[in-house]
Image (cartoon, rainbow, N blue to C red; front, side):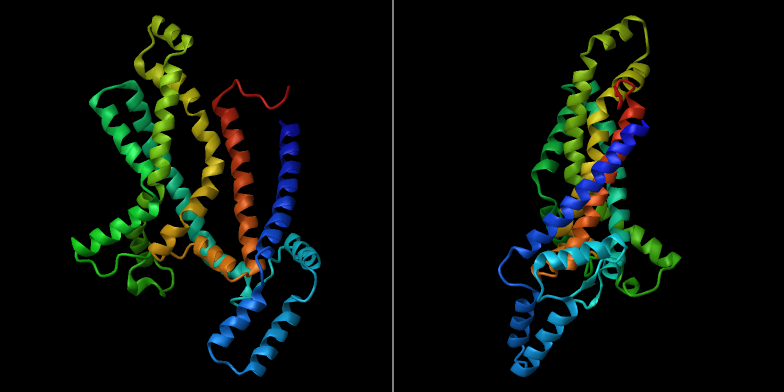
Length: 331
C-alpha cells in the first residue's frame, strides 16, 4: 500500500505539472491578449487615447505582459509552488482572494450534490433491479431517462418560469434572500441559505443522479445473475443479506470509482446553472476569466479543479479497496 501511495503521489505531481503548462498554453492560444481586450474596452468608453496608451503600458509593466509566454509561465508556476497564484488582471486583486470568495461555497454545494446523488440513486437503482419490470422499475426508468435527457440549465430555466408564473415569486435566483446577500455570516443567513440550497442541489444533481440510477440498476442486475448469488440463495441466506452484503458491495464499485471524476464535473457542469440562477460559484468566475483572457486567474482555477480531480480519484481508489477485497494495489 505504501508503494502504491508513493506511485500515485508521483503521478499526481506529473499530472499537475502537465496541466499547469497545457492550461497556460491554451489560455494564451486565442489571438490577442488581455491588453488588446483592455484597449478595446477603453476605446468603447471614449477614453482619451493618451490615457489608454498609458493605462496599457502600466498593465504591461505591472504584469510582465511584454515578456515571452514561457518566461511568464515559469514565473507564475514558481510563484504557484510557493502558494502565490498571482494577480487577476481584470479585477486587480490576488487570484486567491477571488477564488476564496467562491471556492468554499462551490465545494460545499458540490459535496452536498454528491451526497444527494448517492443517497437517492443507489436505493432507487437497487429497487429497480430487485423489482425488475415492475411498475416501480418502469416509473424509475422513465424518470431516469428524462433526467439524463434534459440539460440542467433547461431545468433551471423551467424552474424560474414556473416560480414566476405559478407562484408569483419576484426573487427566485441566488443562494440567499435579498436582505442576506451582503450581510455577514450569521445563523439567520445560514438558515436562509438552507431554504434555497435544496433547489440548487436538485437542479445541479438531477442529471448525475439519473445516470447513476441507470448504472446502479444495470450493475445490480449483472451482479444478481452471478453464480455466487445463486449459491447464497441455495444456502438459505435472507434477501437482505444477499442484496446488501453480497450484491451491493460489488455493484456499487463503478459508482464509487466515478466519484473522483464527478466532483470536478459537477463544479464545471454547474457553470451555466450558476449563471442562470446568479449563484456566486467558481464556474462563472472561470468563464469570465477565459473571456477576458485573464490568464493567471483562469489557470489558477483550472489547477485547483485538476487538483480536486486527482485527489478525488485517489480517494475513490482507496474506497474501492475497502469495499471490494478482490482489488489489490500490489502484485
